[in-house]
Image 1: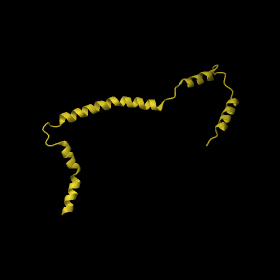
Image 2: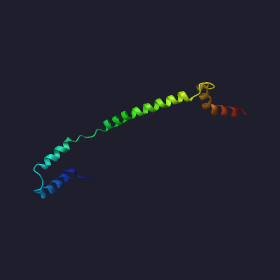
Image 3: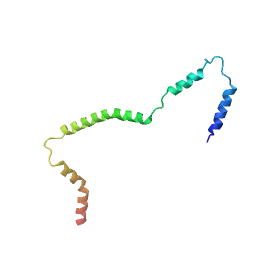
Image 4: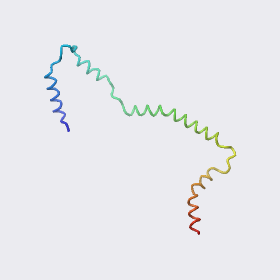
Length: 103
């Protein structure tokens, strides 16, 4: 782990040993520091929230399209009750095991 105070001391000593050139404009460091302070720190939660809100519209459109497709694609004269067919499908394995236990 690096000691931050030691690093700061080394950086300041190196900067003091290298005087600025005459080609550097006056108060250049002040302008650089002011520009660094201008830049806002990105907020991670705000980025996630904006992405999720942008994704809500396509998800809603997909939901509506799939709902309409399932409503119009199923025949109106579907035999039987869907809930009963689902229950029979789910319990088919249990019924099979029960009938195998009898024999």
